[in-house]
Length: 191
Ligand code: ADP
Image 1 (cartoon, rainbow, N blue to C red):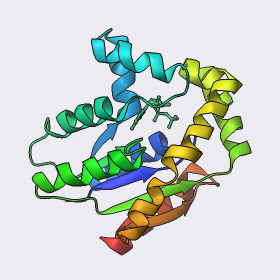
Image 2 (cartoon, protein in one colour):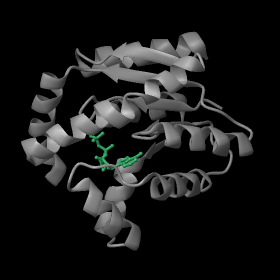
Image 3 (cartoon, helix red, strand yellow):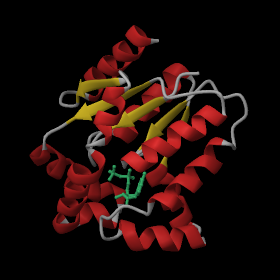
Image 4 (tube, helix red, strand yellow):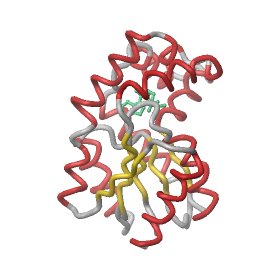
């Protein structure tokens, strides 16, 4: 299997690039943000809980997120692999993912980390708010909080994969096509 963690701060382009990766490598796209948003739309209990954190730009608690991710993975039989988009976002999630994947006789192949500096992220998120309708994109104070949470809790996950020799940094500035090319060549040189 080809299991990729597509990593990066809010607004780095994970969703856009995931679409291209799943098409080229025939993978399942699991975006924890998208799954939470569809639960919010469906007014499920999970959605209500997630919304209370997401609206403030905080992380949904690990236990909730990990349980949800596990049950999503189990929905697919014989996948060629997964793109994990927005997960893991903490070291505890990364640990839980490794343990879970080993019970499924598989593992993470590599982490591709899109690197984009903060000012560019803020500009992109405010622009996305015009079309996404996402409350967490529209408010500069919430954007600040998401970036702070990313720096404090999520960025350390890079070291987790670095220690496993699975970390690859990708320049996330440039045209969408250029960045896709960088991601494809990183995968092809490792796979
Ligand atoms: P972005 O990466 O642009 O911030 P996402 O759609 O990935 O957007 O995430 C939106 C929100 O969903 C996050 O700010 C967080 O509240 C919640 N969320 C998504 N994934 C996770 C996760 N793995 N752990 C905890 N919370 C998460």
